[in-house]
Amino acid sequence: MKGISKIKNKPSLPVYFILIPFAFVFLSAKAQETKKLKNTVKVNLTTGLLYKNAFQLSYERLIGKNQSLNIFGGYNEFPSDISLNLSNTHLSNSSSKSGYMLGADYRFYLQKENKYNAPHGVYLAPYMSFYQFKGDRTLVYTDSTGTQSSSNLSTNINFFNIGGELGYQFVLGKRFVIDAVVFGPATTHYKFKAKLDGNIPGLDENETIKAVIDALIDKFPLLNDLSKEHEVSSSGNEAFWSFGFRYNISIGFRF
Image 1: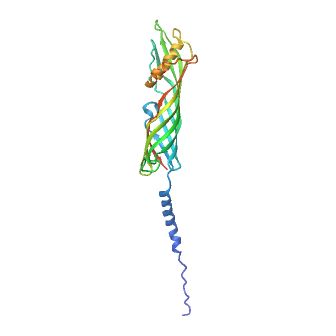
Image 2 (image 1 turned 90 degrees about the vertical axis):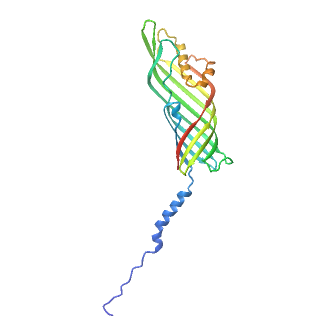
Image 3 (image 1 turned 135 degrees about the vertical axis):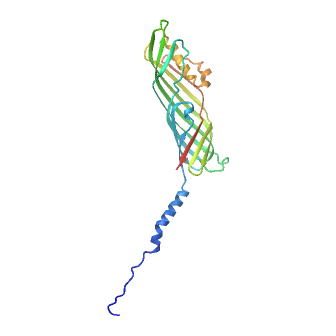
């Protein structure tokens, strides 16, 4: 009929254009599922058992199929509750103290012993670590007349460890881990240094420094007998090699 024009429908959007976003989401989810989680960040839960105000983090990176590099470090303070074996002498509260530690271990996950892939299972690892502690406090001496004299006491402690460790890491689900170093003997170089800023009348400085270092070493009972064989140098240092040990329990997240 005249006057009536044909109405042409516009072509509809192809179905595959509509499906593209859904396909993208599906493929992304699959890629996430199959992605190898090679990195783990962990927090040490046991570092505060020996040291004060301690916080330690570690980062583990898978290298190859059954090996990983684990780097750790953090802040820690040496315990301040030490007592001197000297008459009429005591230490006041610390005016300042600080410390840090850093180290690394290279882990070999034992494929024959483990049911799961790394980083889940038993591992062996050589490790190195370094600790440093610094502190300042006031040493007070009371003479026979009741007169008190004082001087600032500075201490510096370094530990350097070279050893090996045995551990087990649990992987909970896909993302969470519990890492336990259960046995970690080491050969350790210990260095203790103490210094008084000024002389105190009636108090032998060398004897005092020796007593301070002995009190610091007393925090490590395994060192007591060995340290008695060493003398404090003229600069207030006492250094020696001895036995060391590493252990910890950490929790972490994989990504």
